[in-house]
Length: 420
Image 1 (cartoon, rainbow, N blue to C red):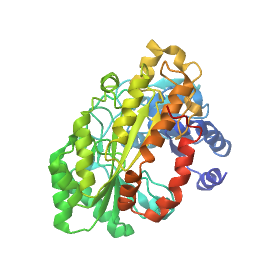
Image 2 (cartoon, one colour; image 1 turned 90 degrees about the vertical axis):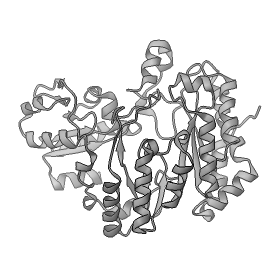
Image 3 (cartoon, one colour; image 1 turned 120 degrees about the vertical axis):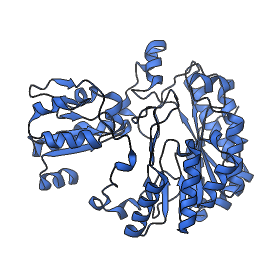
Image 4 (cartoon, rainbow, N blue to C red; image 1 turned 60 degrees about the vertical axis):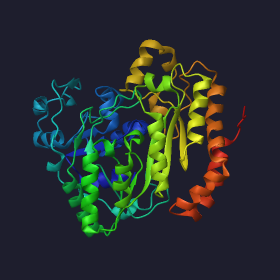
């Protein structure tokens, strides 16, 4: 209601929304309320969900006018320039829109994008209250604090079957000089000295890592960096470790996903697990807090392969880890594989009913209780390790907060566990 009131008072001709699929169920309600107070305004949807389901987004929401499936900097500008002539939208390559009769239309051609990320302006932080975001949990798994996020590349060349990259498979980078320029701007404007990198793969280009680290050190900026989403473990070597740690990196996340060599190949993750483990160990020896991500329940995955994931994660140098059950999001190769090979697995699956905690969907051929018990077992085996808890307390930025919340987390993660 507060959102709609604010929009009504502002009375924009165009309202832009962005959403991931886990929030997609809220879109129809929000759009409906906007249309009640501003019936002639255009409502535009972008972001991951729009890029995944494309024209389907218009079918899910009657009041939605336009879908921008991908990077929107150029296309949204063209939409604004087209207003109020809806017919002019037909000239925007790759745009999805609803004509005056209500018919969904997908324009031919690719959506126009900016190839050189250095040409994009800095985000318009002046339009939001940055301090409100410091009260919320960030992607880095530590309590709220003063920080800002950076995305310094777009695209990922890897083919992981569960992933839908709205930026495509060709990777584009902001230059080290441009990254530092943005950091200096944010540091001077907001007094922030901690930054999260949210790139899909920050260390894919090692030379860029080395150059950026050199620039930060030469300026003696005394910054802190975390990588809750952005480090591929099997691309980490001693030189990368030195570059990251010497510039102020204190936290990295590493995605194992599965410990099974067969599942690594099946899912096209193709992680070099020995190199991955070496990368974690090198970072941990430099005092970096290492968080991990694992996925359990891929199609055809066996009990033995689930146990492989538990064994590798629990025997690694990771300080913390999350064990997620696999969710087949629309627009991913996994979703398409299931439609062809295991359509029955999607019969009762509604992506509008999931959230960040996951969904009770079982893509394996194992009984539900077996899969979900392995998930609980993974948390138990991983965290019920005195040495791991001791090591975590030594590197965690806010150890008193950790002592407060760890028992609650462990209870929720392991209740109803039956350890085999």
